[in-house]
Amino acid sequence: MTSLMLAGLGIAASAFAARFLMQSFKQLQQQASKFPKSPMFTAYYKGGFEPKITRREAGLILGISPSAPKDRIRDAHKRIMLLNHPDRGGSPYIAAKINEAKDYLNSSGKSQRPDDSY
Image (tube, rainbow, N blue to C red; front, side, top):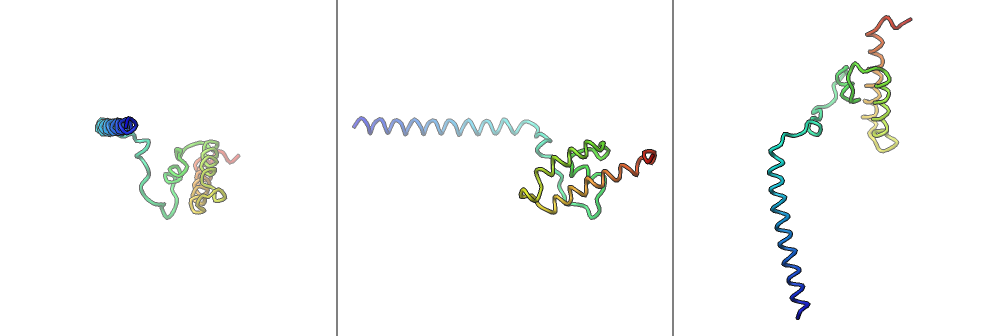
């Protein structure tokens, strides 16, 4: 008889605790909606790839400035390719676009500075 009473009290206590947690969660959601959203998680590039790559698109693909130096381009390419390489389950199309972005930024850097040809 006492075990049934203890089981009933345990169930009632867990129900009250669950109700309290649900109400607290609703209040937390209401308070969180008052804060501005972080652009870090909401600023994804919405759109597909352009037919011909541009400096802007290459920079977006690699996550760097289009005028970044070559060592920064190389580091960004390496970091992204480690995550998206086809041998590790990545898409071959995305890997090709990453390589194209790296090649475009590296080659466009040469054409911008003709004095570096010495």
